[in-house]
Length: 242
Image 1 (cartoon, one colour):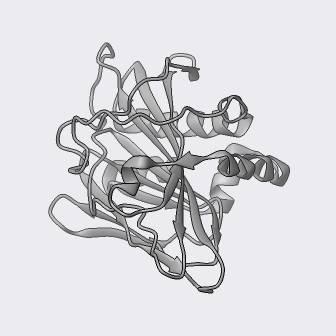
Image 2 (cartoon, rainbow, N blue to C red):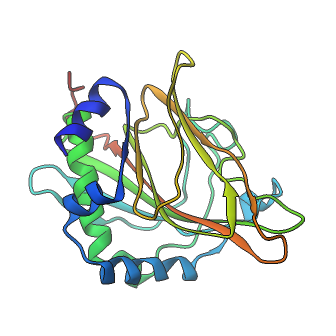
């Protein structure tokens, strides 16, 4: 954990291996197997379909309190990208179906949000955080690639952005990159092993993922990830960590 905090503060990005993540979370293989099943409950993303991308998703919004390190669900609402973030969707209201009750109450999700909350506080001293939780499944087939980030390199307009690989099936490609705002590449990797977590200080980096395609054109292909972001609430005191 200390290494991740230091790397985020100094370099702006960090790649956490599954063994390190499991050591931080202290969860079992059974917990991961249960968590993986939530991706079978995702629904089509109509906004990605406008761009020719087959993507499934849901969306949840939580409030994280620094004092007691707890999260609480917030009322479901439209997903809106803030200014100076994703160029495809800035200020556009997008309406997604919420997380299932089983997903929201999954202990592994709570463990993940607590871990990420500790990392967010290492970047910015805030009392309350808006936490946005988005599970994605990007699909590919013989005649169509799957594009995880059709917007290209972008920011999410938050403090901490994370991408956790849940599963890959029959997929090649999907290289993740993180750059600083001057164009220097900080991380370039293909998330292959479930439980690999890519972290970025979104205030000073850009991130993107190359398309995936089917290794076997005769079979379906997909890439499952969980994106969780932390942004200080408007009411929260905030100070950037040094």
